[in-house]
Length: 110
Image (cartoon, rainbow, N blue to C red; front, side, top):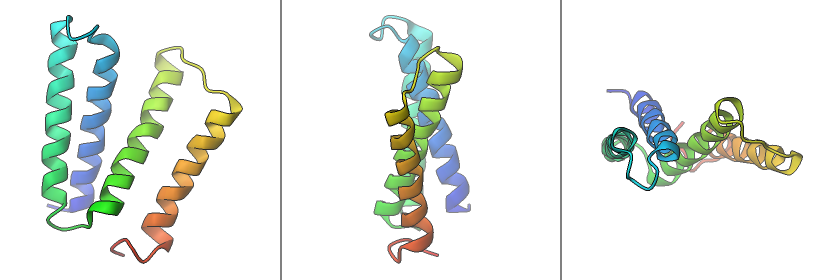
């Protein structure tokens, strides 16, 4: 399977798990805790498959950065959390860093 499709699925799984973490209430709420565990396990399993085809640095950087951006958007849009201008600049820098690593740098597989 295409490693970039797997990477997208790994990111979505991680974001689902992290979103469930907001509701797990210290692992005392069983349904969100189960979603959290399933999301993280799925994400790391998919990452292990991806690393057979792509280098770990760009994969991990992309996985974590895109997840950070998505979690920030989810928190802002759905969980009534706020982001200030400095946070928005930080998110823009994360996006720029992933772009540089995956498109401009020779570290990534083009």
